[in-house]
Amino acid sequence: MRYIGNKTRLLPFLMSTIERLELSPKTAHDAFSGTAAVGRALKMAGWRVASSDLMTYSYVFQRAYVVAQRSPSFAALRAGDPELRRALRSPAFRKSIVGKGALGAMSEYLARWIDAERGFIGAHFAPAGGRMYFTQENADRIDAIRRRLYEWWSAGLIQDDAYYVLLASLIEGADRVANTAGVYAAYIKRWQANAKRALTLKPEIPQRGARGSTAHRADAAAVAESSGEVELIYIDPPYNARQYSGYYHVPEVIARGWFDSTPVLRGKTGLVAGDGQQSDWCSARKAGGALTELLAATGARHALVSYNSEGLLSERDLRDVLASAAKNGTAKRFSRAYRRYRSDSDRAGRVYQGDLVRELLYHVRLR
Image 1 (cartoon, rainbow, N blue to C red):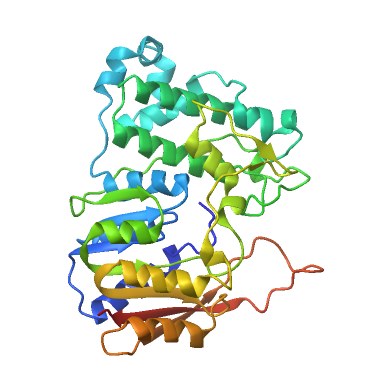
Image 2 (image 1 turned 180 degrees about the vertical axis):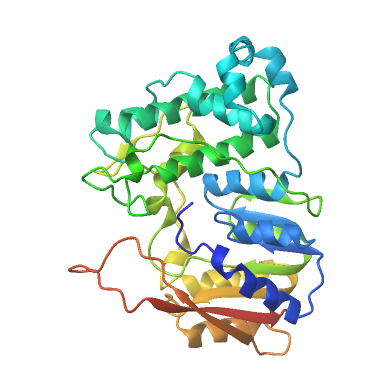
């Protein structure tokens, strides 16, 4: 998924830094999980991970990529869904799933063999709703898949792992055909080539790693306090004033489903009114206090803090907060240059300060 602050390209730098610090895999808290890239890397390196984030789509990724341990079984679904059984008897369907395995077969069925239907996405984030986030066909198919997953899950025909793995693939598949520049703060006023492609699902088979990892849709400080003693807390907060609840509200709507209630949308882009997911880390006035609160709440022995050279907190203020929480009063800094995320091109009122920024990674031994 296209995501501001995604650490996928910086994972070698992050994991090699952990090795340089000689931190052995135990329990880690990934406090701002986002797309769960870091939590997944820690899990694969042998860490037991407690991941957290305010956003529901992040919780879905945490469940799919950090908590799940094996490819899910669909035996109950095959027995309990007559429509699926009919598809499985079809020579054309069987031909389409050759070599794809059970997870691939379910993805093919959802993406190609169920009927599209008009639901919340199609009614509000496509031309029928006056917006152009998705073509009408893709939006209606997103709705059909989302409802089918919910029905399977609520009826007990699929278990949690299957539900979250398939839902994660739907969120990522929708992002691939979203008519945006990478964030959902606005949609493009003409259809891009990617938006005209048909929606596809490409689920990832869960990988085995350290058992006992957990996912949380909650405030980082609350999860830190409830997690007790851990070896490492990894802190990768928002760096600027852009609230993720506004930049990624469409993936959030898909993740939530809203089958028990209907959200009220506001504005041209269809933001969810009163979502309660505003972060203090996106405020220059509040970010320092939020970091102080999180470091005080955690029971971690070590903290790794990722920040950006253009972040709301100055490097001096960041160092001061970290030093005050450190056992020896100092913070060690590691740095790596990388190409900045661009959601659009330079234009009037939005001029990027070069293409390269620096990732600042601080280590402190906490008191």
